[in-house]
Length: 356
Ligand code: ATP
Image 1: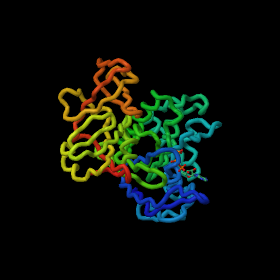
Image 2: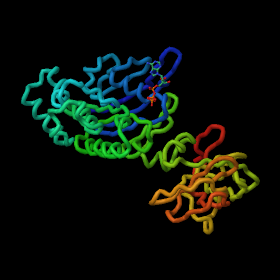
Image 3: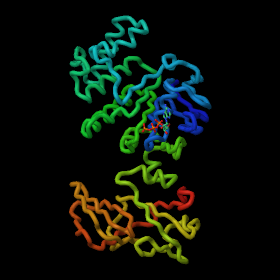
């Protein structure tokens, strides 16, 4: 069983605490994505699991084995790096064969594993080429092929798409997802890109400053973000945050609009003097028949084809709404946006935690 578990995992670099007591269980065959802004400790966590970085405290298990003190090669994992780390003077075939030869695997077995992986990744016509004769996407597939032929218990990916252009990134992302469906190996994948995390993961782990902010399926972290940070990190364009002050049984929003506190449903009981409303751009509706409204001044209109993004200034803060493609308000226009209070998110302004 290729389960992976981290128990109170810690890493310090001198005075810098990069990972501060991480607890996480990854199930066999699960695709888990570690996501978060630069410096949150994602790569360090992955490198500790791979054995490329020592740990400062806690425990890492792969299956039933504590691997804290095991060297990388004894951990039965394969890592695909962002720079692919291919040997430039070896052919694709030899790059893929290298680690199998080192382990003394018989030639016919090596041959069959490489043919199988190359067919799966559509690089079977490239086996005699050197890395310099390949495109970025092809190199990325060779790096994955080299990992697959080892048949490891766990695959680790560290920002594998960051050197690819936007179109290729989408293609290779789909290939990685298909690959997981085909081979079903446990995957732990690091990225700073929330779209990548949402599209690939069975479960997303959102890290911030060396601690876990939230763990959940893509739907869970999108629908019920546990904190303001997660609300703002997951979803594109990002969630809007609008401050509001309580005035008796009403809330006065930035921008001056009022709404009834009771429209927030059972959460109304937990609303204090100040609250932050989290409204996703895609959850604004036409203001006419909406139970609540927010008004701002249009400062930018971005037609995207399938829909339009309208950016408004609301008391110095920008609020973005995703609206129907042919709705094109004029810059400078005062525009009311409707929303359903039952669908919005509420955050405590001090703790920044969700008010559930
Ligand atoms: P990025 O997306 O930028 O790669 P990350 O989330 O992967 O970021 P890490 O590389 O894990 O972040 O780094 C976590 C913290 O540890 C950062 O503050 C970083 O500066 C620090 N750090 C990482 N490696 C070292 C090192 N070898 N020596 C000192 N500090 C380090």
